[in-house]
Picture (cartoon, rainbow, N blue to C red):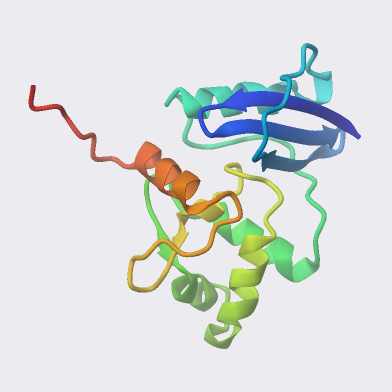
Length: 157
């Protein structure tokens, strides 16, 4: 498995994958040394993440190879359908997947998403509009939602 570390506006990020696809993108809570060499199998992912953070990408088209159960993969696939700049509640996601009673299982699968940003679990919020748990920290979730917001705040001065 190839690995690299890049620096993003939200911290250091570890990317793991191979020719079969990207298996994991994880934001780290520690300082790391960015990789001097990016393996060929990870280069497209690194470019697309940089484009996203620079505001030049809304949709990712990288080959994915996350590890998880069939149910988790079904939830992660549904997450990729949430449009850039939009949010969805866990309840809405459960309904979309065909079982309102599965809301806790959906939330659990969402929390185990191994492909940070590319599979946009940050776009899932509470039914009341609140920011709910996020593996990368609520401050990062808020940053990502602001970054994707279609409303740009302008300075008055």
